[in-house]
Image (cartoon, rainbow, N blue to C red; front, side, top):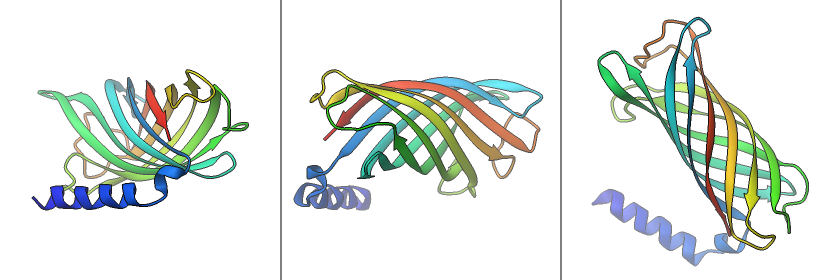
Length: 177
């Protein structure tokens, strides 16, 4: 009940403010890659929901919720969740362009359970491109190569190394408004 109330308040603030009059983007991207510690690796699938807010020419702030799944012992699909914030730099003008390449770097918090298990820091580095169906079209496709780096901490990873890296390729849809 409380979550529904907070979601309704957030949506009321968003629709009542001038946030929709600015350059915003919502993206849903999925993909997969490899979680590695340098010596061994395991396949991983990944899922991201993100919101971008363009600040100044070419620069945006992105907030995202990320989930990746790996085979972990007897668990076929152990899930790990992350909340991240990143800077996204778009090359060239954003106005009236169909293809927009970008780079991203950010930081976040990663855990298997945000309510009970302490989280570990995660660092994101990536690059990609957005392709819009027309110069004025709000809909497009987003493709990204991403490296998310964390350490062996409170999470039960199937790998033994201290430094873990999830290298993934993700693709999906984006909506700008």
